[in-house]
Length: 269
Figure 1 (tube, one colour):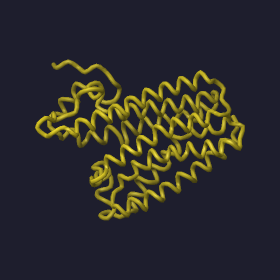
Figure 2 (figure 1 turned 180 degrees about the horizontal axis):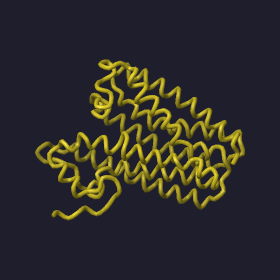
Figure 3 (figure 1 turned 90 degrees about the vertical axis):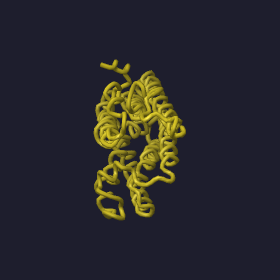
Figure 4 (figure 1 turned 135 degrees about the horizontal axis):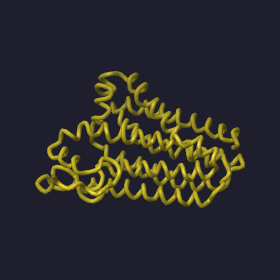
């Protein structure tokens, strides 16, 4: 493994993410919403992929870095745009209110920096390690690259289709809207968008980590593991479910529907 090249790209990527988080902190304070960090989440990965592609051009890395930039840009750009559009006209995300005890104007920006922005910035950089590897290491197995693209594509389908189905549900007139969204992909998993994100993370690891060889694969494998942990246990599904369980009909829906992995719904009784 070309450690010097890897550390070079990783250093520039860390600096870029730090600048992004500073800008996000200023933005959050101005609008009094910590949830703007969710927009920066997708932007951060695109930023790291851009750094890896450009700085990687000074190393012996091959054209795979441009493929990585393309798929990260499609995923991260769509995610950032979707979250930004969804949050227009809305207040703070209940997850962050519960986590911090209020908005930045109520609790100060310090807790948000320590508990959200710093952690999110480090998480972006850490989860991006396979992206960094794609910009600093030569490709060993192109067949693994294309397998990773397929896993990424599966994740994109679950994430984008799941978000579109949820948006269609929310747009229904109140008298026509069921208490809980439970059709389409939501019939098989309570969080198709989070499952899609996990598939994207593992796809990026295949493209950037495993395809670079066994050593880069081992160095970067904790990235998709961490991403999956965040999506399921930390800031994703489990945290969201604390509020969702209070909605009428949701506990019954949860009893028959898999929380994360898409599975056939359980039969009543």
